[in-house]
Structure formats: C-alpha cells, structure tokens
Image (cartoon, rainbow, N blue to C red):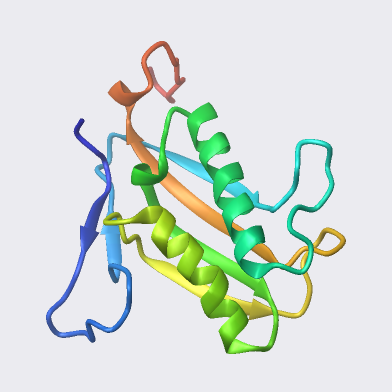
Length: 148
C-alpha cells in the first residue's frame, strides 16, 4: 500500500537518534491530529499504575485504536511527542523504548520530554501524534473541501 508519509534522514546529522529527523506528506493527503494517547482502560481507570513501560504500551494500544477509527495505522504517523512524568532519564528511556519498538522500521520524527505531571491520576505517559493518509486509504469516508 502506498503511504503518504516520507521519512527524511540526513548524513549531516548524528545517526545516534532512533528516528528520522523530518517527515513530509503530499499536499493531497489528509492529516489526522490525535489527542494525546493516555494509558486509560475503557472504564477510565489508569492502566499499569507505577509502570512506565506498561503505561507506554497501553498508550500505544489506545493510539492504534484512535488511528484505526480515523482510517490510519502506526505506519501513517508523521510525528510523535512522548511525554513522561519523571525527572529521571531512565524512566523516559523506558517509555521511549516501548514506543520506539511499536513503530519498528517506521521511525518517525519524535520528541521525548520529561514533564512534572500529566492529567489523570497515576498517569506517567502520554503520546501525542499526527498522521497523514492519502484520501484513497479511507474508502467510504467523505471529506468536504472549500470550493468543492
């Protein structure tokens, strides 16, 4: 399947980062802006209390569900921001590794940030994302455009 997202790398930048440094999508793609994916169970309770890896995994699962409802998948994500409620770099890396592994070869441009607190009780991880799909990837979905 043809994807809208093109990942961009540069030989002039360090290759230590586990992600592409930039990404593009063609003008005729449909952008999907996701709310921050939180580690919440369907009943609203926080999953994996006290577990950075467990919360990152649940947030990725919830992001996959939101993407699917939008006619997209992880391979359509064009960028992420991973927020981790901790001042300890190892906690950030623990959460990041789960997110990074979920994306596999689709190593989208990403930002990893330590924050003081997140919105839900016992929440340690949140993942923001933007995706891009070609309109043909969402059959049966109608989109209105100005002037159309």
